[in-house]
Length: 97
Image (cartoon, rainbow, N blue to C red; front, side, top):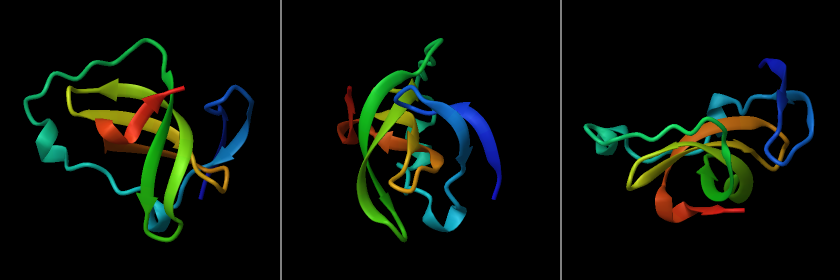
C-alpha cells in the first residue's frame, strides 16, 4: 500500500493512500467503451458519484471526472476511509458538484 502526495478532490492536499484492490469500486464494463469517443479534459471536473465496493458497500463519494464517453465517466475519488481510487462508472451514478 503506497502513500503519495496529491491534491484530494475537494481542495486539500497531503499524503493519500490508494484504495486496496480488495476494496476497489466495481466499475462499468470496459467492453462497453470499445470504439466510443473518450473526452479527457485538461482539469478534472468536481463530481459526486455512487460507488459500490466489495468490503465497504455503497458509498456516495466526492471526486473528479477525468474522462467520459456518452455512457460512462472515469472518476478519481476519495472513499470514506480517505483513500484514493479510480473507476469507470455509468454516467447515471455521477453528478456535478
